[in-house]
Length: 118
Image (cartoon, rainbow, N blue to C red; front, side, top):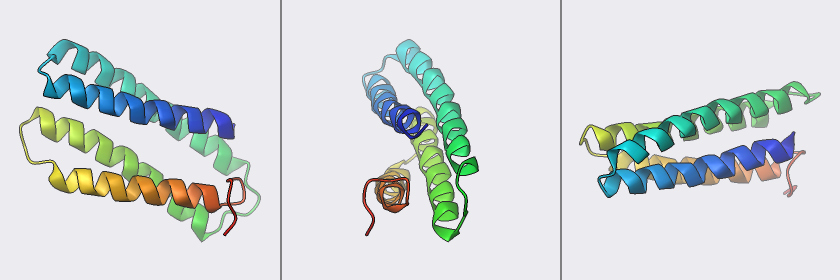
C-alpha cells in the first residue's frame, strides 16, 4: 500500500502543477477537468494514507503529525488553485505548500515504513 500512496501523491503533485499551468495560460476548460481529477486524487491519497495508518501497530505522535501535515498539504494545494481562480493573492499558500510538502515528505521517509531512519 505504501507504493500506491506514493504513486497517488506524486501524481497529485504533478496534476497540481499541470492544473496551475492551465489556469495561468487561460485554458479554463482543461483547468476545470484537471482540477476535478486532482480532487479525485486527493481522495485516493487520503484513502491510501488511512489504510497505511490502520496497519500501523503503534500510532505515536510522529504518525499524527504526518497525518496533519498531509492534510495541510492537500489543503494548501486546493487553496492555491481556488484563490488563483478567484484572483486573490496566493503567495502565503505557495509558501505553506512548499514548507509543508517538504516536512511531510521528510517525516514520511523518517517513519518506520519510510526509507530513512534518522
